[in-house]
Structure formats: C-alpha cells, structure tokens
Image (tube, rainbow, N blue to C red; front, side):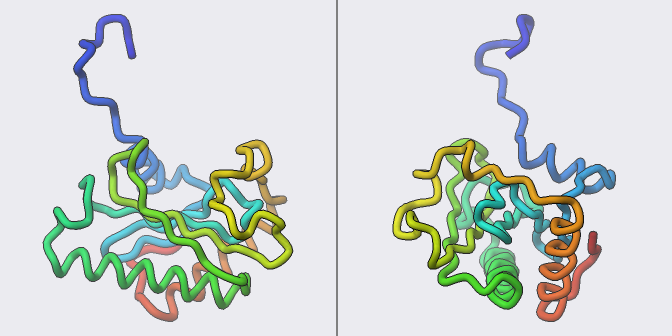
Length: 161
C-alpha cells in the first residue's frame, strides 16, 4: 500500500491487470480469447500444460453471474479440459476455482501425471520453487499452439495468441 493510500482502499485486481496485458499484446503466455473468458498458460509448468481460465467479467463468484453466462463460461472450462487431455494426456485433470487471493472468477486447470509421487495431494503441497517451472521457449510456444488448436476445435475464439 502506498503511504498516501487509505487503509480501506480496494486492492487492484491482479487478474484484471493480466487481462489488460493480454489486450495490449504484452502477455507471452496468452492462449486464446473465448466469448466469456481468456485462457493463459500458467507459470507452474511442473504440471505440464497447466492453464488458467480467466472470466472476462470482473465478478467474485460464479453464482453472481447471469445463469446463461455462467453456463457458457463453464462450457469454455470444459473445452480447456478437453484440449489439455488431448494434448498432454494426463492421468487426471484437477480444476480449482478459489479466489481467496484474487476475488475474480478464474479456474486453475492442472494436468496430473502418474509419475508424480505427489499425484494424490493438492498441487499447492508441492513447494512453489518446484511448481514454478519455466519451459524452454520452443517447448512453450509448441505447447501453447497445440492447446490453442484443440480449444478452437470446440469453441470459436474471438482472438488467438
């Protein structure tokens, strides 16, 4: 908090800031803009293919959305899951919609693999230093393109990376 900022001032939304970076073309891990969401590659690539779906509407709870909009957003989440299953062939996908740190509706989609000795534990149990794997540029671009192609087979994008 800045010294001149009131103690009760609302904290800026980190997800809205990411969306602004995507809109300006300054977010390298952008996958696709869908009708109700933005899809990005997450920074925890220990779970290869990890993506985050960001609701376009700044809202803190899915139940606060109009019913049709919430259903369309959920359909986009399913498309991301299908795409990840087709591209990275995980043992299982974990979906998390938390919002405790960023009260803006978003889903983390974590591919889980048989060779992960902690595959039965929540991803957050693994130390951040181990989760936050950065892919080599060619591998990252190839993975982004493959996920994007699979998502777009199901839901037409308004914009792709």
